[in-house]
Image (cartoon, rainbow, N blue to C red):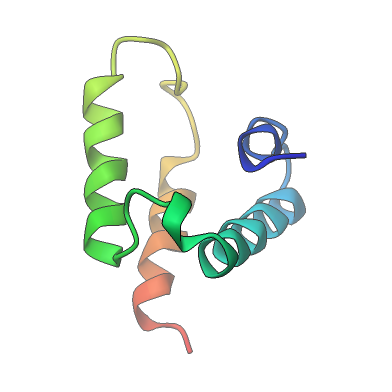
Length: 79
């Protein structure tokens, strides 16, 4: 199963953890396949994609946005 397939099948915290592990592993193994290899580029791409697709219905209005924000923030401070 490729990363996109894994992404669309994430339905739980455990599956999200496994997806993040797979994403990090893919970056280490296939860096040439990544458009955004730096944290700055990665975060900018996330921001741009969300802004560019805001009206396309890819993301629900009532998602647990605080949870995702907390996960991203912990990437900054957690050892």
